[in-house]
Amino acid sequence: METVVSGIRSTGKLHLGNYYGAVQNFVKMQHEFNCFFFIADYHSLTTHPTPADLHGNVKQVLVEYLAAGIDPERATIYVQSDIPEIPELYLFLNMNAYLGELERSTSFKDKVRSQSDNVNAGLLTYPVLMAADILIHRATKVPVGKDQEQHLEMARTFGNRFNRMYNTEYFPEPYAFSFTDNLVKIPGLDGKGKMGKSEGEANAVFLSDSPEVIRKKVMKAVTDAGPTEENQQKPDVISNLFSLMKVVSAEDTYSYFDDLYNKCQIRYGDLKKQLAEDMILATAPVRERINDIASNAPYLSKVARLGAEKARASASKTLNDVREIIGFRHF
Image (cartoon, rainbow, N blue to C red):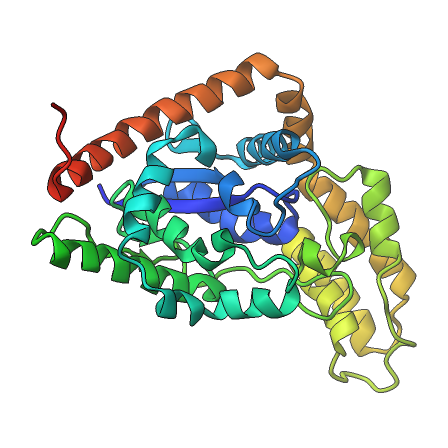
């Protein structure tokens, strides 16, 4: 069975874009692959070195991924910092990573421009830590977005370089992977792009949002003055609301409002009220599980402990092999 590794950011809550995109993919993958899903708390320090509540953030992410359908009996879900083998492999890989190639990383150059007062060594070697996360389980499949493809290419580079340097074929090559070719793209409420926390809290509907919060966010979504011609093309601020409705609403509901728009009879207030109620209904099961799991400290402790045990069993095997290949021996 092939191994899949994917990191989960430890900052931020799950929103509809996460849920209908990556998370539902993860839920499907866990039935067909040997999956390792980790909460990347080490990675978060590269941009947030002094988090206000690191443990609380990790707990929130763990709770929401469990509520969304990750099964700790089928997949291995763990906290990155619970696996000491990862930073040790990171150390070994750093010895074979070159300054020039790290400085050419697109994400590093972007971060230098956006956070010039916090250009730390961890930011520079972020791709090496990502490579360690993947190679520690000798994974061959990595679900990543376009923005991470260069980092994945660097992970292949570091793994292949290790193999050449030590005359071995130990590390397989990891490649980008999607369980489906038809990923759902969820737009934000502002109509300016995809849903995401980085665009502001009001742009995203989070799985943990209460019905009241969802209603307020959706009702504040920007609209225009309405169509002036029948069957005219919808502008972005309107098409995003219809795109959201296509995901969470019944097909006949979508068709009803689409028909009203095409006839220039649409009332955006009615559209947004319906969309809000359908979002509330669609997220209700997950929201209820979030509340139940968050209050069950023994269960969360058990899941984290089980995940760490399973991840360390894999990671320690890899690290022992790597140390042996390099030449470390105990006297």
